[in-house]
Image 1 (cartoon, rainbow, N blue to C red):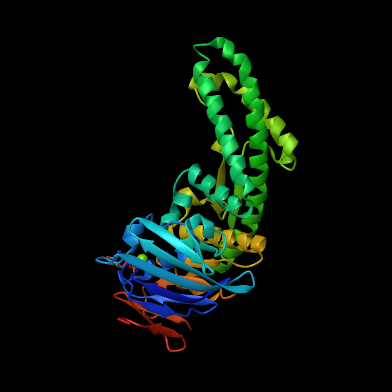
Image 2: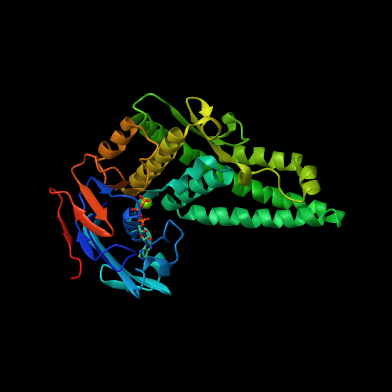
Amino acid sequence: MYIKSLTLEGYRNLEISELFPSKGINVICGDNAQGKTNLVECIWLFTGGRSFRGAKDSELIAFNGKAAKVKAVFDAAGREQTIEINIRASRRTAILNDVPKNYMSQIIGVFCAVIFSPNHLTLIKNGPEERRNFTDSAICQIKPSYAHLLAKYRRVLNERNALLKDIPRHRELEDTLDIWNERLAHEGAMITYERLRYIAQLSQAAEKFYDGISDGKEQLKITYKTAVPNDLRSDQENIKTFLLERLRRKQNDDIYCGFTTSGVHRDDMTVKINGRDAKSFGSQGQQRSAVLALKLAEAEILGEAKGEKPVILLDDVLSELDASRKNYLLNKLNDRQVFITCCESSVRSENIIWIKNGKISASEEFDIVSSCGK
Ligand SMILES: Nc1ncnc2c1ncn2[C@@H]1O[C@H](COP(=O)(O)OP(=O)(O)OP(=O)(O)O)[C@@H](O)[C@H]1O
Ligand SMILES: [Mg+2]
């Protein structure tokens, strides 16, 4: 999957322009506050998602402007497709292959991209919830029915938690708890099974990318952190039996606490570099490299499921990385389309998109039309 052309009008500080990115690595280069992240953010919108910076639609429109229009012509599913997005202060609408769509959700899945921004470092720095969310949303992208499974688990968990709070005042309710134990163990086993399978794939791909980024000097290891013993993990029924037995064993603790103290909602994904926990012992550069490897691995698995590689958007990834790691990102991922922002004017790449004060221009080999004022 790759973008053939991109047209911008009235988007943040970017001047009206049309650009024709390369099929491989595109380096977006410029000083601070010139519009590099704005351009990456604009490309991300074609996935149908919200701004990855959490911006409101009105904030995407140029100061003093009333509307913005961005259009991408891209190759996906073996044919040329177009998405035009019209942004107004109150609303964002899209036109997919000349068919108007009222809701952005109607274009999700047509143009696929994976984004890395420094905000994603929380994937390592923060607690388990961040890593569970990453895993769960990655599985949802390749298996939409997984979202229903998660919602069902959440409902059963809420019911069980409500009951746990009531039991101290109504002891007779304790007899009904085992129905919820059974259901929670059932859904929990399915979730555990899916996460184990996904993380095994993710781990393999992420380790390969990390090996490339660190030039073979360091090793990344990703594992799913669950109480389910290794020898039971390959069978859903065995997982369920284990989870059920544990819920029953911890039932009194749960009643005392008033919530469910064990289960897949407490699981984690461990990220280790050279055998040590990346969160506690990883340097800034190592943590950045690990998140990057995870993101690239996510894209790889999504690409295998969809039959084509998603576009990779890397915003502000190069700071804190040494020359060899930078070189890997700037040169070694050329079998897919990558947009990578960079502040260094000394960067060497065939395809550089220069941005100065919102004006987009390109290196000589690169075909670009900047039609300021047209
Ligand atoms: N709606 C808007 N209209 C006009 N300008 C905007 C709008 N939103 C943001 N800007 C301006 O865009 C400029 C560039 O922002 P951007 O985040 O893209 O910079 P950058 O090139 O990524 O810089 P850095 O290297 O520091 O990350 C900022 O100075 C900001 O004030
Ligand atoms: Mg930026």
